[in-house]
Length: 53
Image (cartoon, rainbow, N blue to C red; front, side, top):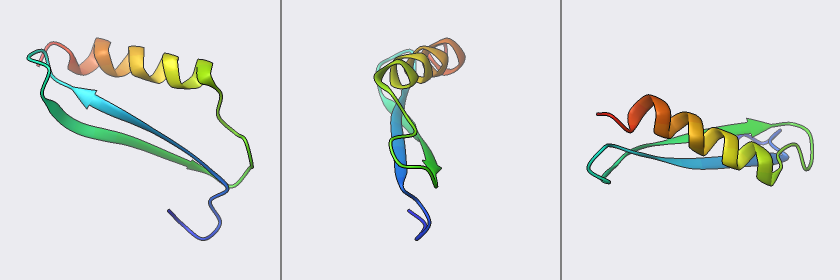
């Protein structure tokens, strides 16, 4: 986390076999920049992209 980071969202990235293959970590300099909808959307994208590996 950078010193200017005021919000952070972290999403685990899983492969098709359910094993953890990475973590998506996004920072923002704005407070409360991310919502539960952002979390759900990013989790869905990670599943669509990496869930077949």
